[in-house]
Amino acid sequence: MKAAGANRVVPPWAASLLARLAQSAPSIVTVEALAELLDESAEVKADAKTMVKGLVRLGWLRPAGVRGAWAFLPAGVDDLGDPYLGLRAWAAVAPTARFALAGETALWHLGYLPRRPADVTVWVPFKKALPKGLEGTVRLVTTEFPKNVDDQTFSPTLALIKKRRLDLTAWASKLPAFGPEAVLVQMAQRPASIASWVEVAPVLENVVADIDIERLKLLLSSSTDAAKQRAAYFCELSRASMHAMELLPKRLVPVDLGKKGTGRWDNVTHVTDRLVFPLLNANAKG
Image 1 (spheres, rainbow, N blue to C red):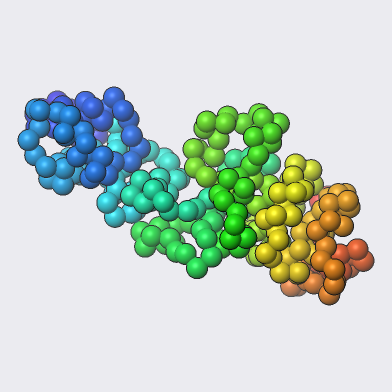
Image 2 (tube, rainbow, N blue to C red):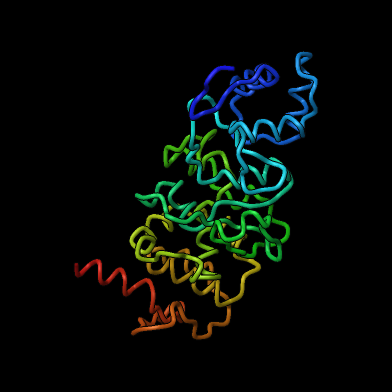
């Protein structure tokens, strides 16, 4: 047996398999994926489930938070430091699962925020849930989109990815994520789903400047009138009055943004802003 990192060894029965894993370097391993590798190797006779147990015991595999998936740690690596490991595990065991990085997490990947948020914000479809192993490990949002909208529509456009000089093949850590239009819908439907408006308020104008108004109108089409008014207000506040007028419903009613403090009434959208404008005003004075 040869030492391989922190007290890990390569026993003869696992040498061939570990060599294959080292070559492909998967972040997540499932029983099915391991079985395929074993089928390709005539040297290993054990079944995949037995191999998983052995590799977990030796420290080559670690639980990834979702049943049926494990994280692979290459030689010399003791901590993968991947905040999305559980999401990758979910995608591996349930390829049809729908989720996307949202809120501040998406804004950071899009380059609007200077620091990675402490929490990972994840969207799942309305009335859907996370796997039990991921509950409590991420901030969950359930923004509602029209039923006829596919996942590609709430992702950023190719034009925006090029504009912001993001890597098309690796942006958002290769996970599905919201574009600015979907984030704006999230903000409008559930302002409280944004954990730190202190961070988001100063970049709101940049986010609005990058939206595709037709895409935003589509994503917002099944939202309540109150959400449409908030979305219009975000545009109005960000000097995009033309967009604001396109988003407003026919009938306007008084709508709140934030619940405490002195509010700023916007006569165009009929929104009383107790949340964003006070932060922008405080920053301007500072």
